[in-house]
Length: 215
Image 1 (cartoon, rainbow, N blue to C red):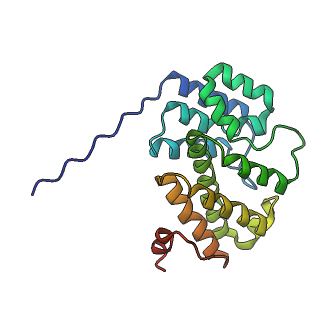
Image 2 (image 1 turned 180 degrees about the horizontal axis):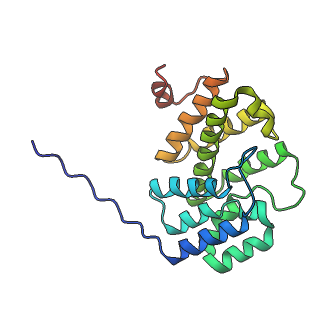
């Protein structure tokens, strides 16, 4: 029997704006690395942009993914104005929505994360997609590091073991409100796996998550 035709996906074109965004991100984050590693921070930004594109995001969202940490880590509000000038209003709005602090020093960790989660509830679908991709990339990194070094991984995080698990568990639950997409599904699985590895898995009201874990 002939194979059924698959629907054609919309082609996503990345042009000079994306290239300029990559160069800008690499310049702004130059010298920065992932937590307790020698991995250049740009690797995380590339990973988030890749997830956004694989989920069907367009060039604006891929650019926002590359720049999602530039305000928080590289200069605050003046940098957001520069992002808007270079890449437009839509990109700047998503970057703004992904930023949990503008001031230096940053507010206390728990206060900052609670405020971010509260804001996220009101953010656009564009912002929530990029944010979910960011969190998925982060959780996958934590999983990889946990398998390598075990419980000592938590010393790298301001929230420690319990705070970090609380944060990603709460985000997983928040993103369940969105229309299902590959990022939110994979985030659900990744957070559940992290809970299982640490002995912190909690029952969920989402039957798909239970099925995925063979419950």
